Amino acid sequence: MLHSLSITEWKPVTGSLPPTSAAEWQSEFAKYQSSPEYKLLNPNMSLDEFKSIYYMEWAHRIWGRLVGLSIVVPSIYFIARRKVSAPMAARILGIAGLIGFQGFLGWWMVKSGLKDDLFAPGSQPRVSQYRLTAHLGTAFICYTAMLWNGLSILRAHKLLADPTAAEKTLSIIRSPELKLFRRSVAGLAVLVFCTAMSGGLVAGLDAGLIYNEFPKMGLGLTPPKSELFSDFYSHTADNSDLWWRNMLENPSLVQLDHRILATTTFTSVMALWAYTKFSPILRKMLPAAAKKGMHGVVGFVCLQVALGISTLIYLVPLPLASAHQAGSLALLTSVVILGGRVWVPGRASKLVAQQLATARAAPLRGGTRSPSLENMRNNVANGLQRRISRGNHDTVHRASEQGIRPILRT
Image (cartoon, rainbow, N blue to C red; front, side, top):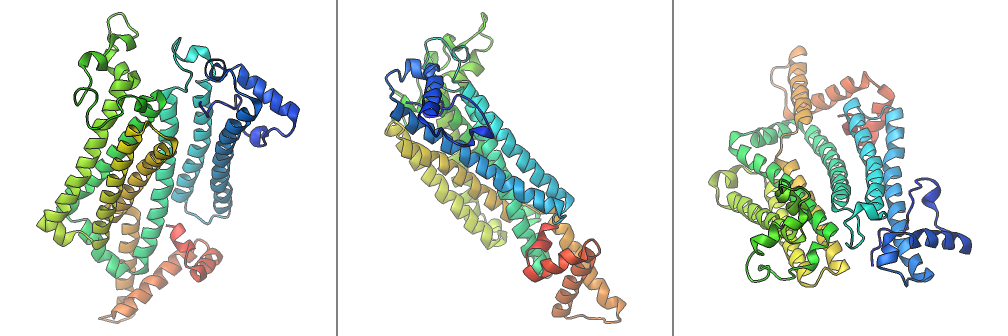
């Protein structure tokens, strides 16, 4: 039984409340009864059974709207009161736009399972795997954008709290010896994202319900080539689309692709961990926080592999499948956090350099030849306070008391 096609209309405002009367429930049920899912899969469904799947879909939609409001309303306030810088305002608006686009994609996905002409004749009614993956991918991108902005603010706040120590930390992570590691973490983030998106194709095609064994698929590590690249999925007379259609529409090849990407991700993580463990340069230069972050990535990738194999072997039970999907997001989160500890923060680096220059120049103007470290830190703080105060004295005064808002203006 599918749970994503019970609400056959998209009403962002008026659809926020579920049916409240028997007549309204009968109306919604009648709309569902006209859908391919009811006709082909659930022709004997009762009204009470319909209510259970309706509430699942309704809760998902309401949760999405609450997430959107939790971003949009505070964003309007902070931007209208000019409590964030122009670059930060642009990023916040971009995230808000992504959330709205995500809602549209959700309906576009559901719509693909409501019409007979949107799926192959004789096939089981389901949403398009392309639209499902687009919906999933937008959710991942939106989440990653929010995570990265939050991490950037916290990191900049920490660096600006002690510019002298920050200068030493930044000089270490800028070193050419760590360049390969920084790029490897970025590549790993892309690989994890692509693996998760291939999982969306697996879910959309129910490809996890075949070859429920690991590491073999049938009699070997892969199915026969004739099955992987079948003419059945080609839509052209010359089979010019044979390769890409099988890779995206053939459940056997889609599952194999996901296995290959997952195995590559696991291997890459373990190789990167070994690099940090056995490279003398990295053992010496890599910050302790980055080493801990690498251990976190290893833990999450091992957990994700275990969840993936278990989900496959046990025929995709909903709790395991949900945990596997959440595990992919947790793994991506751990990689992004690791990146936040080794990637060079451009804007924060400039601010640190400016504050150090101000701190070193201020004592010289006063005739002091060798300022103490404490005086330097005080001068840095005072310089930052004076420069920001020129833009909005009252806002900075309140921010200095709370210790939070100054960093938002970075």
